[in-house]
Amino acid sequence: MRSARPWLAPLLSALFLALLVGVWYLATYQPAAEATVDSEYAALVGQAASTGAKSAMPTPGEVGAKLWEHLSDPFYDRGTNDKGIGIQLLYSIGRVLLGFGLAALVAIPLGFVIGMSPLIYKALDPFIQVLKPVSPLAWMPLALYTIKDSGISAIFVIFICSLWPMLVNTAFGVAGVRRDWLNVARTLEVSRLRTAFQVILPAAAPTIMTGMRISIGIAWLVIVAAEMLVGGTGIGYFVWNEWNNLSIANIISAILFIGLIGMALDTLLARLARAVTYRE
Image (cartoon, one colour):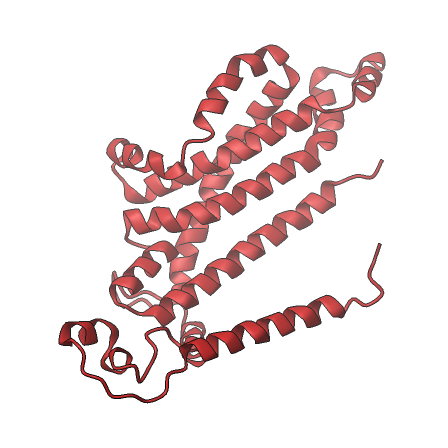
């Protein structure tokens, strides 16, 4: 059912954004004041912020200026600790897509096997239930110790966190295919391989895509924390490096970019999910 006023939702979104920016501006507005403060604190947050003449939290205008600065030259490279935010995002997106892709190559075929065989499902379910709740970052020390490469370790962590939603959803979708459809395939003497690709896969595709959508969201969440731990490159490392530089405006800018990329990835998979969804 389509809304009779499709413009209403975007208008409300714009009003909420304006309200948020207004509250932000008022919260960071500070009248001029004179105060004597500790010199070390002034060095930490800045002289103006320490005296109350300026908020330590950047204003919307300052963040906007930083955003424009990043967008005007996103791919500069001036050394190890000074790369454009576009380069950092590309590193992170590359790690997420590689780990996510490897997880899909493992989870979807294995999920098919588990969903089609109640015996294998019962045999593997205890292992899945034990490993699934483990935080992906708990694997990071083990990965660093065994792999001895920070970049590959980050990809391994993405692989682990992306694996379980796709595996569980694939098994659930395959096991939930209507028995009537499978019985028709048997009646027509369709081979098991052809049944898997032409009956089970189309029927389970919406559920599989839901698992992939969940996985990509978790992967994008985890990569930021993983890159903070391993350092080097990536948007997570960028955030941590800017915290060490006490650049709150850069941190907020990075948070906005992280949210936009996450929304883009989710929207892409949502469109793919709608493309494979069927109406009975």
